[in-house]
Image 1 (cartoon, rainbow, N blue to C red):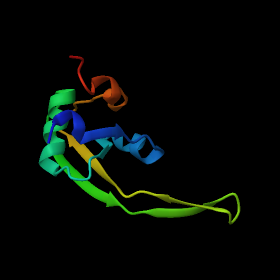
Image 2 (image 1 turned 45 degrees about the vertical axis):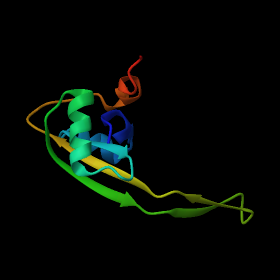
Image 3 (image 1 turned 180 degrees about the horizontal axis):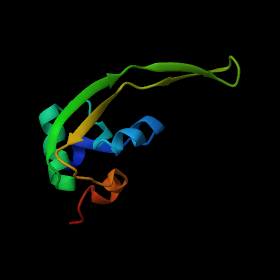
Image 4 (image 1 turned 90 degrees about the vertical axis):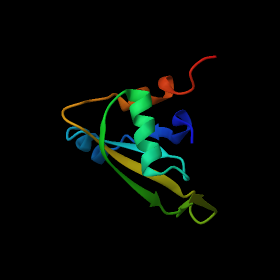
Length: 103
């Protein structure tokens, strides 16, 4: 799997922002990405050494919008929590600019 297609986007929630203080960064990754693929992608894109990678599949979620008229289903996606070695920090919001180098 290519490094630039492994990481789709970074997750920015209150919980993930608190985890960044402990060098843990959360990303939405491709469904078929393995832990090794995610580790190589972070090393290639950000140049940081990875200590551990935890992956999880987030299940489909359904909710009602506009009363009972519209029923929306969120698709299943895969999330990865990456812990960096030492006191290394990265800027996960720059993932879109680091993606797809110009030809």
